Structure formats: structure tokens, C-alpha cells
Image 1 (spheres, rainbow, N blue to C red):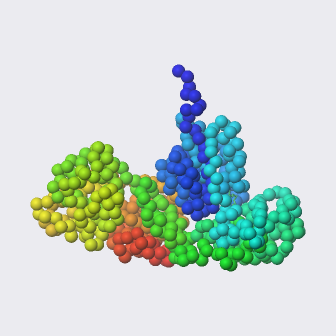
Image 2 (tube, protein in one colour):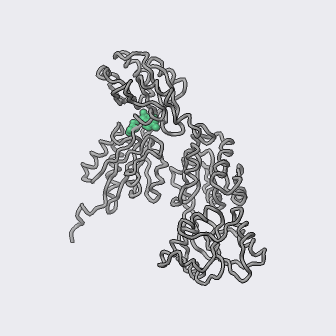
Image 3 (cartoon, protein in one colour):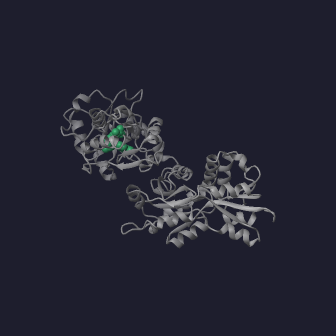
Length: 509
Ligand code: SAH
């Protein structure tokens, strides 16, 4: 026996540019690398929302914020290498803000991989140097105004010694320069740049916290200080800054500055659930924090009882969530079956969203109640007396549906289709949850799981909550939530509306 050759190891490092903040600015290659990762090391400037592309991966925060470093670059380099070598070798995604090789010390991380003999790839990202101005309506070049640009760092020990060399460059893009802006502007003027050159500083560009201050090279430091802008920010110096007046687009679009704009809205859902609600909230300007509180597991008996109940069923199959549809089809698939297994039964969906999930799998619901909800399904189901009603659901299903059917003198059977288990968010998610302006609750069990996270330094019950419907709201109040806003109807838009109302009552960002 010999040791496995090194080439059979899985060890691989992707150095990925996460883009400037807007999660839509990750590249497709970056997304794929995240999906394949075993471990993700991410930065302070890499939007943590991107972690939803890698729900199964272990995530390690290696943020360095400004000058107070929690972890040194050398430690990060070593961590990349040891993480890649762990076990039989792992796929490491190293997610870096902006582009990998623009000031992020990505070159040193690549060198560390080379030194350790670990194969790696570089996935360039959209750099904040260009994107932050772009989101402020400032093109870094323009045919009539600027034909060249330079990207510089304000964080150097030698100060402005090299500024003379930049005299022929039209647009200057200054990163890491807020702290020293006063001195840098002075040095640039001393090096011959016109003090009247327009200048703009863009903080948290491309995110809903974006703020912009404009002035001239002579005034920008003062303007920035007055406006209270801090890192991370890009300062643009050049005639192109004037174009903002005409080209401003992002920070005066309707979603920007809306009630949810720049606020963190926590969405409780399974890590693997589709995040349609997240998309609705993002479109309204919210920063969405997906908190994995529950995860779905196969039924305790592997679904045997559900399958056999389905085989014997003469009558109605009742499905009360998207997850039930997902679990049903994976159960059928595992048993070598498909949608034809439902050919003999009638199918009822609890609401339009569940009906849509069915339709996506080629099954049209025979019945959807006029108002979504288990109670209404039970009250309205057009079931004949000789027909059975089988509810395939999780072990935690509430009994509203059963009660409503039994109140009509009808039969009801239930079999476990999947299990809902608690999933504890990691420390990083918990930390961000503390700062959420609102938390959305899509189900009573989410409310209970969240309440269970209470600890000495975190009281989830003090967060304003937006509940999907009256039943969820009741469950939330029972669990101890005191500030509950109820969605007007059981739709994602109504839930987002409720989140806006709840956010209005919140003082948090
Ligand atoms: N590799 C990164 C830059 C890392 S240096 C990139 O290509 O963007 C960190 C600096 O980047 C910050 O101090 C700030 O100047 C800038 N920066 C990063 N994200 C930013 C953002 N969303 N808005 C404004 N500046 C940003």
C-alpha cells in the first residue's frame, strides 16, 4: 500500500471576487465555485447574503475591519492552506470583497497556495473602484471627459510621494482613503491637481446603505466629514463626477429610500428552501438575512407509511405547504415512481403557492380554497362522504385542518411525509440577527424555533415580527413575541407589506 497520490486529493482553492456589495454582482463562475465549496472563508466586505449559494458549506468569517485586525493576513493565508488540506482535501472558496486582485491582498493568498502545492483558480469580481462610482451615476471614463483612470490606495505609509506620476491621469479612484482624505486631497493639490476638480465619495456603493457626498478636491474631505461618511468608501476625483447630476440612477430609484431600504430583514426558513420571499424583500431595498431555523428531514420511517397510505387512498390528497410538494416528489422518486402515482387521487392545495409548486411538477390541483389556509381548506374541501382525505405533512403539522374536516363530520387521516427539525444558526448569523430591523415569520414553528434561541445576550422576542397570517401571528404571540404585525393576505407581497409596517416601528437599521 502506498499513500494516495497528491493528485487524487480534493484540495482546491477558489479565490473569488464577491463584487462590491450588491449580491447580484457575483459572477456565474463565482456562484458555481461557491456551490461546490466544502468550506467558505469570507470577508467583511463580501456580502454575507452570498452564502445562500452554499447552504451546506462550513463558513468561516475572516473579516478584517479597517485598521483593527481580528486576524492577520498571514493567519488567513495559513488558514486557507490548512483548510484545503484537511481531511482528504477540501474545496475552499475564499470570498473577497470586490475583485480578488485589487488591493485585497489576493496575490499573497494565491502565492500561499503555490507554496503549499495546492491547485487554485482566480475568479475575478466586480471591483468597487468602478462599481461604487457607477452606482452613484459616475462613469470612470467618458469619451468627452476622461480617457484614463487610476486606482489608488489611501492606506500607504509613503503618503502622496507618487502623486506627481499621476498628473496625466484623468480620473482618480481612491480606495481605503476616508480616514486620510484631508491629507490625500492636500497632497494631490500639492502635486499639481486643480483644487476645483469635482470629487465625490461613495460609501457602501451598490448596497442600500449607499451614501454619496460631492464637492471639489479642495472641499471633499470637509464635506465627507460633515456628512459622516466612513469606510468603506471610494472617492472619485475628476471631471466625470459632474455626470452624476445627469446619470444618477440607483439612489433615486423608487425602491431606494423606501421603508425597507437599507434595513436588515431576517427571513426564517430552511437553508435549502427557495427564497422567493427574499427576492420580494430585496426588490424593496431590504438587506435580507436568511436565518436557517428549521431544516427538513425525511420521515422517521423513510416515508413508508405515507407511500402506503397514498397507494390505498380513494379520495383526496391534501398538501399544505411547498415543502410537502417537494417531499412528496422526492419520496415518489426514491420509490421509482412519478406523478402518475397521483393519477387516481384528487389533489387539494392549501393555497396558490402550493398549487404552483404542484403545477411545476405537472400536477394541476383539483381544489384550492378561496382563502389560503388549512382552516379554509378543511371548511371548503368538496369531499364526498365516501371519500377519504389524506393529509401528508410533517410531524409538527397543526390540527386546524383535521378539526375543520371533523367539524363537518368528515374523515381525516394523516401520515408523516417529512420531519421539521430545529437548525441552530451559526454565530455569525446570530450576530447579524441581533441587528435585524424586522423578522418575518412564515409559520408558527419558525416563531417557536426563534423564541428558543433566546439567551443572555440575545432576546429574539424583542424583534418586531411580521407574520404570514393570523394563525402564525397567534403562534408567535404564544411563543412570546410582543410586536407582531400580521400580513393582510397569505401572500409574499402582503408579508413584505407587513414587514414594512413593522420596520417603521423599529429604530434599528
Ligand atoms: N478588492 C476590493 C478592494 C479591497 S480594499 C475591490 O476590488 O473592491 C477595501 C476598500 O475597498 C475599502 O476601504 C473601500 O475603499 C473599497 N470598497 C469596497 N467595497 C466598497 C463599497 N461597497 N463601496 C465603497 N467602497 C468600497
